Image (cartoon, rainbow, N blue to C red):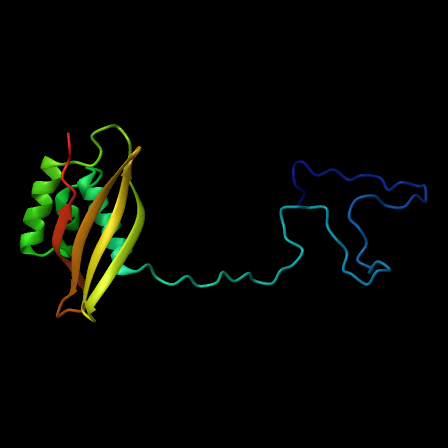
Length: 160
């Protein structure tokens, strides 16, 4: 059965070299032939991406708190990662001193931490909102379920 668009073509009678695909023979340099097709790589070995270490818990929590304090995420989005009194503090800070009041999107410039004992971090972060820098501080504690929870949150008060 023939395809609709396929038509038999007569063979050329001249002895010209064929055009199209390069021959499979090796060039004199000893390297494999190169293809002009950029869609397929010449090297078919699987490429491996080096494994990246997971982000430090202090960096993850700084991002979470920033998203809540700037109004990009609701407060209940971070509720399971925040302990009782810290949740109340964060709710108060989010409504009293929002980070994105001047139209700029806040970004974290630097995160540092101090580890008073193996199951706690005291974290400080420098937050930039446009030309202004603000300080964010919080405490992380490793719970009995081996998950980090925020137990205290402080934000630099806004000055007029």
